[in-house]
Length: 183
Image: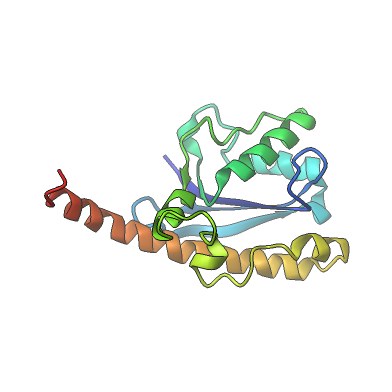
């Protein structure tokens, strides 16, 4: 069983008309959330979208028939799901479906940490992430690829801090809950 941080960057929000410009993933240690190995950043401007998706399938275990070979961990994985499923189908690749396999979406925890409010529960509002990624389509259009890569690296670090903190705190919350009168 292997957990992987997974995120993508796109040129917009429409999975049919916009394209995936990066796929980033990194193996995580179960239980601690600490990164294992390097952060893989696949770039459309180097590979093309179809080839990037094919490389993701070939180099990771996302396309394995055993769903526990690649357990995606991220924030708002529904977004990654709709893009990866649409594009993998479009290019006649193995259909990548994140939501029909084991996955861990931290968005729910961010909403709970934000007193049940969706508004203001983004990774950029809840961590030290500088912004929500809205400049990325402009950077892509202007070929400012280094800005995109720097954003991806910074976002990965902020996600990692949050995920590791949750991995450390959640067992203690469980113990507190079990020992409370709520049970």
